[in-house]
Amino acid sequence: GNSVTQMEGPVTLSEEAFLTINCTYTATGYPSLFWYVQYPGEGLQLLLKATKADDKGSNKGFEATYRKETTSFHLEKGSVQVSDSAVYFCALGNRDDKIIFGKGTRLHILP
Amino acid sequence: NAGVTQTPKFQVLKTGQSMTLQCAQDMNHEYMSWYRQDPGMGLRLIHYSVGAGITDQGEVPNGYNVSRSTTEDFPLRLLSAAPSQTSVYFCASSGLAGTGELFFGEGSRLTVL
Image: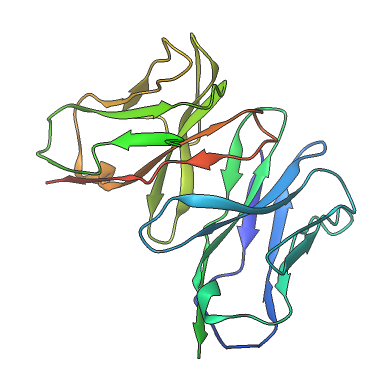
């Protein structure tokens, strides 16, 4: 079946540091891949997505590239801000209509 | 500008009680789903629906029932609550099943004593 594995947190960085949150997946066929962000006390919201191999999703300075050869969709940002502190979820959607999430990575950015 | 609305936001139940979590969306989305969020477990799919009259099981469906009589509403029923169902529940909808952006409600925090 489909599954998503992302790096365990929490991740703590200083402001302006480079961020990588790893995500790998297992799926049949050609899934769509997503990153969602959850701020405290809120529901999840879409950060970026990619629907086919080699696509790069980007939003608010975050980027992730759909790598089929390594079954990965790592999230990166060149310079993080305190306001980026949140929980980040990698997710996968496939033809079976189920959207499956990873366990989430909590990110703390120190000023 | 409502989007996805969940009620109630907080609920405390005793073991064996029943209740319904309500979810409504005003975006005319065909796809709706319920997730539960637990510490260290991420979000796990309970049930989903690709349109009115159609529902299917997700990863953790046991102990939960759903129905989809209209496009707008997708209630989640707990027939006999258990402490293991203590969780935060999220309803989400999408205009495109499986590959589209999910729009989430604000969540419902349920405690079963």
